[in-house]
Length: 124
Image 1 (cartoon, helix red, strand yellow):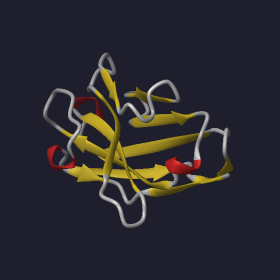
Image 2 (cartoon, helix red, strand yellow; image 1 turned 45 degrees about the horizontal axis):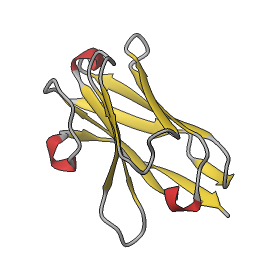
Image 3 (tube, rainbow, N blue to C red; image 1 turned 60 degrees about the vertical axis):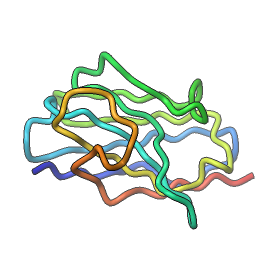
């Protein structure tokens, strides 16, 4: 079992920045591939970005490429999502997710563990 807790969400103006954190506890964090997803009201959960267990591989959704950056610190059992140049369309609840299977995954069904989410709101 892995427990995930997101933090860092909030309200920001368009063009601003936020950094989300996802702290993991339980099993060995470095054995897990991690992902960030988001869900806006009335919409399906959407892939944002993922990172391999070592941090050596990442994959971004086209909608955030060049604006968001994922990183992880295995010593701190934490994965980060730096979000720059935020837009109102980025408004959503952001979730981190983990899977013990090595690789890069973009579908929610490929992840076994989820955090409770953190709200990001971007005003125009």
